[in-house]
Image 1: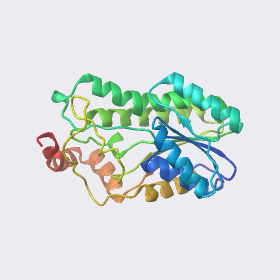
Image 2 (image 1 turned 90 degrees about the vertical axis):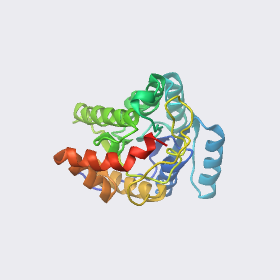
Image 3 (image 1 turned 45 degrees about the horizontal axis):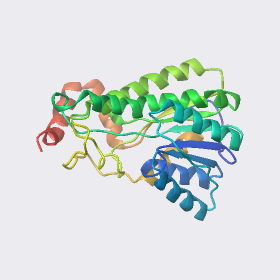
Image 4 (image 1 turned 60 degrees about the horizontal axis):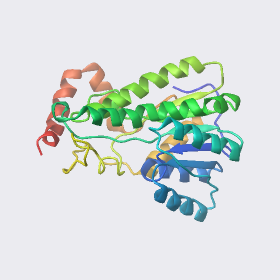
Length: 274
């Protein structure tokens, strides 16, 4: 579905990207920057931010970085206030920061779920709340990086899936609340992407999972994902399911949930018994 408007230009627009130091976030900074956007990357990895800013500068892209742990509301408010002051406002907020886990619920501490929700769900809420006044004034756009796990179960990632279901429900509702105010909301559901999120996945105790992930289909590159997100944002998409596999999974889990659950469980069961 599309918004009834002509293609959007991001030239000169202020684009805030959370989780920007690597992966999809880094690729988004480069893609929007090449389109003329003024990029404001946020990440808690200060060294990664410095490296990104150097890379952006080499590409001729101006960037105003801010070190920020999105799970901390005070840091979100402070970082976005600095960006507004230095750049005059915010036109696009891309809620990209996220973490995951690979562990069965029966073997997972509740603290792992709390951490995942703090980053994936509440991190997006904190940043959206802090940026919303500016987005309303400038009739801006919110882009939310969700997942196919936000509409289909994924074995061993119940906390991650819960956070993405929550994102989808919240931002679909927020879109309705903002209808008529000129702020667009696009939800993006990438498939499996070659980033560090799975390499850094938590185990049931909150440490790093020490066994490899399973995957379905060919991994997309962060650049491929960022290019698709840019095109979707420019053309006014509401929902962007990026991979052919993701579109199949969405339909199968909705209309043949038992078949989907059986096939998915066979594929990912080994992750629970490494």
